[in-house]
Length: 74
Image 1: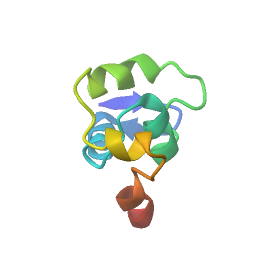
Image 2: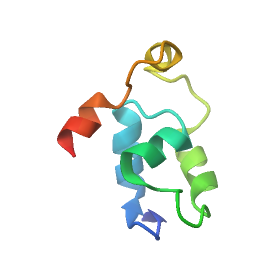
Image 3: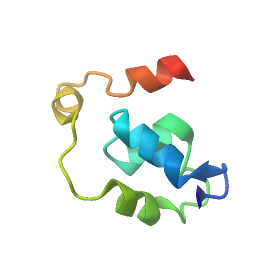
């Protein structure tokens, strides 16, 4: 199912980016642009990400890239 119709981003794609380290809607937006046009999908992205712990929060807190694997694959 599409989450972001502006950029054609699916739930599966959001989940893949989350598995790759994206913990916030802003990080999802950096990875695939979802949520950067009309913004109507941001709440759905938040729901998909949930409130669980971020596997790469420590990297983000230190200012290190958390999406390196996704950026290399793009």
